[in-house]
Amino acid sequence: MGNGGTGLGYRVLFVTPLVCDPYSMQRHPAAIALAIVLVVCFSSVRAETDPLDGFTVEEVAPGNHVHRGSLDDRSPANAGDQANSGFIIGERCVAVIDPGGSLRVGQALRAALRGITDKPVCYVIITHTHPDHFFGAAAFRPDNATVVGHENLPRALGQRARPYLKSLERDLGDLAAGSDVVPPTLLVKDEITLDLGGRTIVLHAWPPAHTDNDLTVFDTATATLWLGDLLFAEHTPVVDGTITGFIRVIDQLAGIEVRQFVPGHGRTALPWPDALKPQQEYLQLIVRETRAAIKARRTIEEAVDTVGLSEASKWAAFDRFHRRNVTAAYAELEWEE
Amino acid sequence: MRSFVRLVVAAVAVMALPLVAGANEKAEPDPAQSQYWPPIRQMMFGDKEIRDGKDVIRVYLNTRADDASTVPVSVKAQIDQSSGRYIKNVYLIVERNPSPAAGIFRFTPDSGRAQIETRLRFEDFSFVRAIAETNDGELYMSSKWVKAAGGCSAPADKNRMPANLVGTMKFRFADETVEASKPALVQLMIRHPNESALAMDFDSSKVPQFVRHVSVTYAGRPVMDADVDFSISDNPSFRFYFIPEKEGALEATVEDTHDKRYVHKAVIVEGVPLPGG
Image 1 (cartoon, helix red, strand yellow):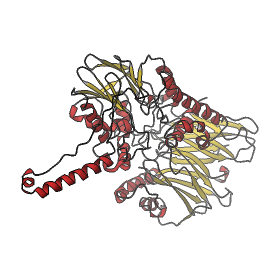
Image 2 (cartoon, each protein chain N blue to C red):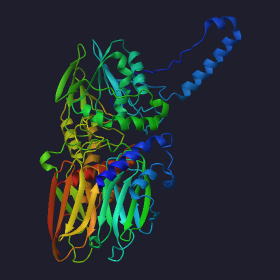
Image 3 (cartoon, chains in turn red, brown):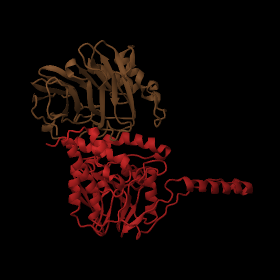
């Protein structure tokens, strides 16, 4: 992964259906002319304003197709397209991994998928409980796919669905319409293997790290590891579980033999497992400096104002997530003896 | 009775929600114009005058909070805690939380200063209001607008607290040693999920377990006493002053909604190093 140079690009166009009355058009050539003008204008306007126009996926390994989300704040300009998402195509069917941050993103991913294969979608896998990864699941309802998640996912979704939906609507307005929580029906405890026909994928449920319901997907045919938000590239890592647990899980991940990998956000040119290092160094720095602040009897506010600032230039969205990471780290580490 | 007041306040606030459904949530509103405030004010303070608090009480927190489930807040008295005139109560209110009264903190002249630092959950963008009631019954208010949302529903026990740890406590002292008669700052930390009523797994038969009362004494005299709610973050933390003598015990008693009672005690001797680092 990492460079995208080898990837095939697929461009998805949203076709605005032309609704008209052929009978009246036959009788009124002027109406036809007007309709053409309208369609042309309307189409060009849509092409400029549709935030998901230009939605692409790239094939990072045979049968493994990845879409890269935006590193920007969620807004109507990206329709909630922030997380990396994608799918793995087997001989029998397709597994979608993280259907994206809104119904619209899920629909764009589904259209991209349909541009490549007619095989049915048998699984929609949610790597964890964050809205930028799961709200697009509603787009795959017509496929009647099995929705798969970590055994802790239903509980987390149940607790957070309401405020997540509210803030999605606040950020996206009309573009949030139809986005919804699709409850998982297949839960992963430890590890399970799914058969896509001539191709198996291994889903591993991790102990609390980025969240308390992180799931990875490993495509055995190509040794491609889909990490969800257990790996952030470019984008500031986010701690919503436990920072010490996150560091431990990354150490374990580094021991897996991987040929290709897909982070939950961004891309990297670094090879595996070096690609884990920038994130690991960031998290370790926060732990080190927060422990020092606690030892020096500084308050949580003082720690938040001072810890980890040397990392600022290395990450996108630092202003949005770094302080919250230090807040969470302090609240966790102040209990250490 | 106090819980009853809180329940009524919560109910009134929830009823008031539809009134502002169309409000522009992005603009920073005027604290005097908030439609959430009048019913809460009426229930808690009736028609009593509430004065501008800037010379008596101030509230400090980040306008854009970083983590809606853990928003550090400091409420600091601007007047001395003298026996003639002192702040006896501080009301901390998160207007738009399902149960807006996050805490009612009681102080005495023995507190040294009327100051409380804690961490709050925010369900939605909201004004935070700190109201000081002086010993002569006057009320003073400071308000601050905070942009943070979803924190009441965030799982309170992401890391699944083992039951035997619930209720364990720690004191962290701001300074390495204390001096007799000089106000000293201490943080009381309570291991507790402080379950939010909104964070339950749709099991309405279960009473959420959260800390409802905290009482701290030094040498047997009250220093800080608080009625609190699930607007306080998990692992509740309270930082406040007390006035040590040459030697004495600081003792915290905590009660939760499951009628569990937890006690923690530390003997403090002038000049002897204290935990905190």
